[in-house]
Image 1 (cartoon, helix red, strand yellow):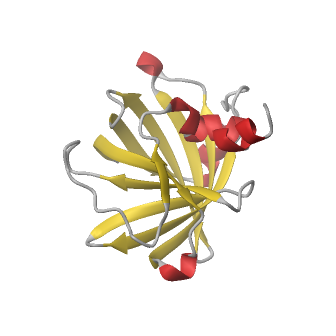
Image 2 (cartoon, rainbow, N blue to C red):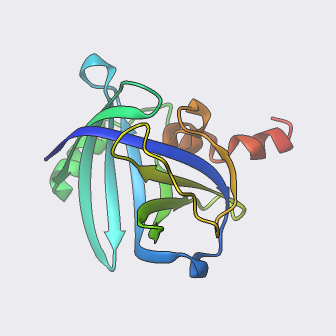
Length: 172
């Protein structure tokens, strides 16, 4: 079980050329949000597939600041995943994404791509402290930082099945 604090910054980016990134891992993720836990903790389960192998995880998060969350995460078996998934939130669809983990300037970034967009993606980096400087990759076009913006949470993106920019362009 991993328990601790997650300090993360998040960026909306133009879908980059994956071949130009120093990709270390490619993971297919199905993420399902569950009904909230104690103290309104956000709960989720994930099915992660990498190189043909599948694992399942359970996560609880308490949001402390826009950048910092208390997080508890651990691996579960398929039986526990199936038991928990029936607690899925009615107001939030499961989200499918492909995560590319890549290095740039000694930092590990995660790029999440979604099946509904071939022009936008979300890039994240976990930090040691909220003040830690980030050297953004020069081969990725950052549109804007979306850290702490609830419209760019995975739950909001999953429910809308689009980025807020796409909805605005369509007049929704």
